[in-house]
Length: 322
Image (cartoon, rainbow, N blue to C red; front, top):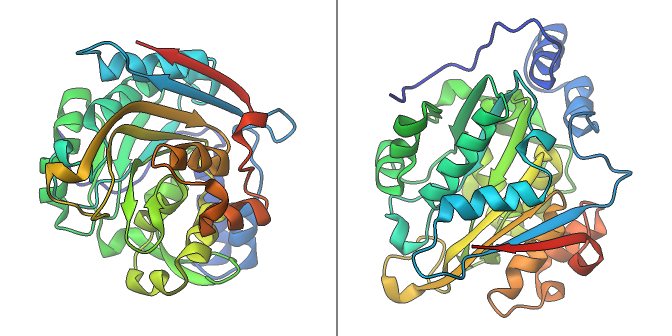
């Protein structure tokens, strides 16, 4: 059964998480030293190798009544399997978008079948712990219950982390707009971090896709992030650097986002997009809404600041279906 937790671990292996803790201890605080910031931006051996060509796998549900979990599994298998991303003994944190107290049918939150499929794949790959974490907008208990995240935690034994002030620490973002900001600590303590957003409309940024999902990874006065939303999105995306992004476009919200509220706002796309290039993942997902990626400010800035490419056709691409 899921429960509120503190993010501690007793493993003696030197991991990304343990290295961060050591830096925290050496600095005397979580927050404001260049050493911590430098580590947060440092390329890490267990992450995607920048020397290798980035990849993208697109999964399509074609058969009536297809299994979303089977599609999730096939997408990762086509990318080389979850063991390509998760090693035995890892603490994995999955960051879905479950900010709103909405049922899955309204496409405001990450599909729980996709979430459960990813949790199970991480466990099969040998993860020591799998955690689900998001700093919700609506009451967390209602969000976790209505979105299905609570059910996923109960079904799989994953740890559902409730956001609270004790798990927020001021950290150096070193963005082009954002400097110091409260960060949801479980996300930076993870050995591996999987970004699992739902694709939907947004009234300010046009779309909420992978990179914007990191606004749910911080605390503080998040409304201030909307004052220059495209740059804020990119500042947070360069800080968190996920191991991989899986965009849930099984159902998408086409208008009245990000919270929606009626079935008339929802379209079925039956699509998953997996990539180690966050800009490319967002660029491809934007086309599901009939958008030109070049017209979206956060995609242009992501490319400008070196987070990836909007030319997803240049990636090592595969497509699978069920």
